Image 1 (cartoon, rainbow, N blue to C red):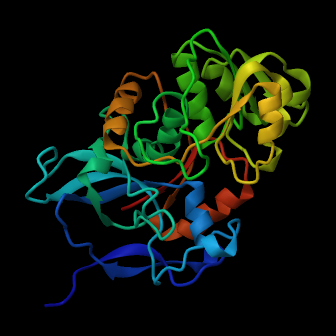
Image 2 (image 1 turned 90 degrees about the vertical axis):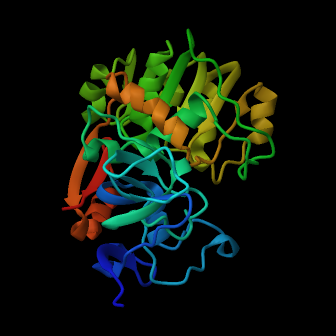
Length: 339
């Protein structure tokens, strides 16, 4: 019997956006515990281009050695096409969204850049009813990252990034500085902090000021005109959605007993200084979590949290979407659409 096929974007080698090929690929087979979803939209996230490039930022011994071709992507929104016999929480026709098998398949592709995908039911939630598939697809990884850093970790898995468990801090009445506030994780972090009663200082480029004001920030700093670490003091928590080796510059903004949460902690080398200053530095690895997506869906439905869309591209133009990401200055999320 001929193998059923679908359209997908696949990698046959690591490289630039030009290695993303829109082509025929085998349809996924429904496995126990899974739901087959007809994909309507796909959210882009940094792990998509890290994988496409072969995780060049990692030491060689940590880089993936996948069996090509591979289908990248972690986030999607779509409609249930079929359900395995042992799945009871979803039915054919349900509109759903998910961050799929992350980080388990993060290094080799969770396969959302496709017309169909098999999703573990534990990773899946009903799509927020009042938003469309494009906005729903823009939420999972970025919103779960902000949620697990700031609200509820939601699991007991060992932290691969540090020897101690990440613990969110109470936000009500606190002053929170969010660096990279206009991006995917940043704009969700702003909204969650305001929801929890924090005073929020947003740091982003000037083009994001109107959006940040609309989201209710108390103070806005255009980093192209003023360095937040030079002008802000006495902060309780810094969410650095940019992260990297320079994240320790925010130590000077924090009061003793404060916390710094770098979303991208690779390269950080200031733990000794943090301890001397009485600052907690902590990060975590975002993990797929269907129940948490069901929880945040209520916030998306009632308007407490909204998804900002930077741009959309057809799935066939995934390379152009990655070029847009590489250009930088992303406001919110880039999303691929599936006809």
